Image 1: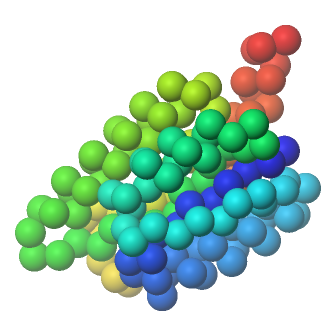
Image 2 (image 1 turned 120 degrees about the horizontal axis):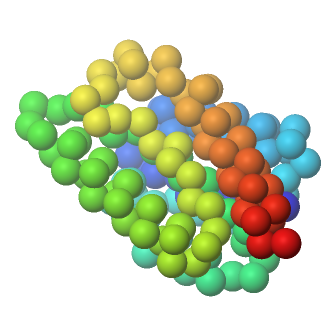
Image 3 (image 1 turned 60 degrees about the vertical axis):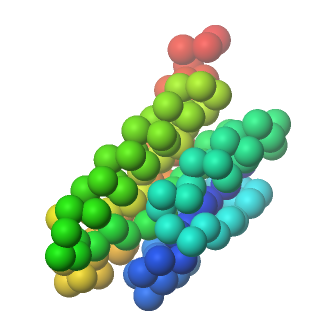
Length: 138
């Protein structure tokens, strides 16, 4: 199974660790990471993901990002809009796009605590969804 990983540069002290763990998990699950792409922030992911999903050698896209709460509700806006766009792309192309994006309403401490579980689950979800889709399509 071939995947692409799209990682946000914003909060890179968190997302760079998420990327390392996601690649490690993909390798352990015998998945091939065909593309690794970075974007400035999670809001910037949909356009790149749309392009990746058009590729025949991409079976799923794993997203990685951390949206940490600030002094306004900007984190909520970014998280909700991005999650909706990713779900829409997954349905449009009939390929998994997993949500390895933490937040909203999350503190910096919480973001650090969620690095490993979120990164690994995002990769696991891509594999599981692809397998389930394959069963249904047969």
